[in-house]
Image (tube, rainbow over all chains, first blue to last red; front, side):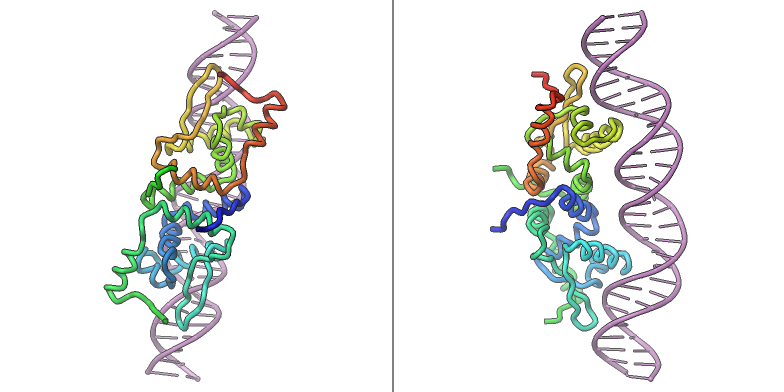
Length: 115
Length: 115
DNA sequence: TCATTATATAAGCATATACTTATATAAAAA
DNA sequence: TTTTTATATAAGTATATGCTTATATAATGA
């Protein structure tokens, strides 16, 4: 079981504001159990690539996600080392599981895997 | 123990956006263990009365808080019947306890009590 | 009834936000 | 080495947000 980290009001509200957007909350839900790259988010969320990249940048700047380049692709994952991770994990238990969307992506042959 | 309610992405992001503001998050933290009236928030948060009332209206419109008039005063409390309550309760465990601020208010003779 | 107190609402405004389009960069492939 | 693919960034813009000031409403008390 994860430890319950207490954040300052300032830090907590910053995290919650970032989660308080449908696009970013879905991104975080997708990252709960998976690594994903930008083009997968673009496909699943049906949004422009710059729009997705700009959301990811906000999440990265705040330390909520990590990025790792693998060839052409930049893979994003939750930053489990960040103080916000405990709060985020609990929040994500209150939204619908997003795995189905990745399964559908896989079935349509658009899932990216570099392992 | 409270049941873990799952909200839609849309509903969850709306709740998180409302919590993603320092003023509103502090208000919710104060309401975690107490009923409070508008003038108490004004005093504790050192903000104008209209600013506080506008934040409370957003929280009320979204169903996160309830209001009850007692004489001159309008008392606000968490809406425990709302679907968002389970999420909100967990979020509030990740911020510092706000009770000290109410104790200080009481000691300065400015706490309102109608019971 | 009229004044006072607590709160709500309306209008205005400066800033923040989330897109868009255009362009830059970085890795791989031809 | 040039092209292609994936991503990042910059600039512009429409809308949302959170305050301000001014005013309205609602309950109490003189």
